[in-house]
Length: 260
Image (cartoon, rainbow, N blue to C red; front, side):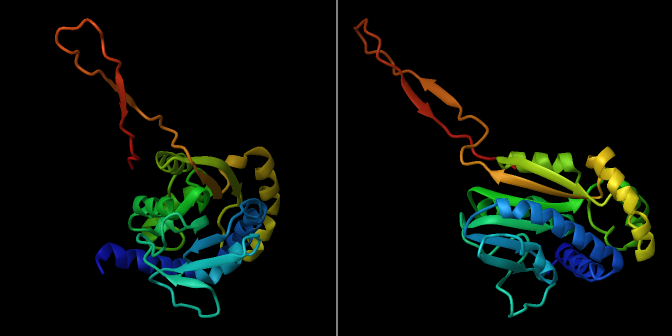
């Protein structure tokens, strides 16, 4: 295991422990509420959560019967759950086999988020959905990250991905952004008493500045037909010598593949 893989493994393990704190539990509750609005609208046969098996409740609201969790390299396998052992950037799943993939803060703690997204694109069926959960850089949480990222504390040790950049990455893979929801407008305070006192800020934030929530949940749909049009190249057969009749042109096409 190289240094980058070991670091990503350590960070994900630390984040799993952080979700047991007062602030982490509050984040889990709000993210669950967002998914309860989104997942029932996504249908299919297979839904997969990438990482953090201790948060298996994230898939509870989905109507899809077959629910699976990818146990990443930092996690111990729980035989009571339907899970798959995996490396985050090399998913052991057949291509075009998953209907919905949920990524809860995995990209922020991945050694190669681009490769992980390409893997998600590979395993999703046409018209399948990816649900990305992340920390919003343009929020109070983003300000905390600027101050605390040097202290090696959770959840500030990851690399936050701006929403517009996430949209660009998904668009390059021919995903259509269907919806983006925000939550947690309060400061990321550790004390549960102060978190309760910030409830008015939560209500005000949803009404006045909805795009500045500390947590975002983005839903992307894999397009059946690529957004980039197929480039057509026209070639004409050479004329036969000694005739004035022009041969009809022959059309050939080279499909432009995805570049990421």
